[in-house]
Amino acid sequence: MSPKFYLYKPLCLLFLSFSLVACVPSIPTPEGEASVAATGETQNLYLPSIQSKGEPFPMPNEAPLTAWFLAERAVPIMPGALVGQEMGGKYVFTTSTSILDVKNYYLQELEAQGWEVLSIGEGPNHTVLLFQQGEARVTITMDFLVEPALCYVVIAGE
Image (cartoon, rainbow, N blue to C red):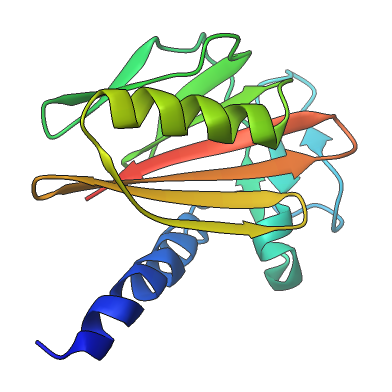
């Protein structure tokens, strides 16, 4: 394979992870707002990473796990997660911790478990980490939601 492939592969995977996350079905609400149904069970958010697409994401509403398994490898869920839920082959949780703290937690924890950092992408209120261990890859996407003051974290693997 050409050297260009190795340079562009992490970027392509990052784009793919955004595309896959954008396919989560939900109920539209006005841009930038969260909506809660009368039962309190359904809540949708607009994430900064794809805000321009205007697609909402569901808010998790279950007790968080301590780890999510990807190809028989445990990916820890950050302590202090408020709620979590598996959604469409991904694990989503929220925390009141900053993106920087979430980023540092996953860099430390996953590297200690033998995961190699392939790329780190950062923007305003958004960070994406891509790790690899053997043939397995995991992407951790973090969006800081200013209005509810939460970090929305999506863990996806391949």
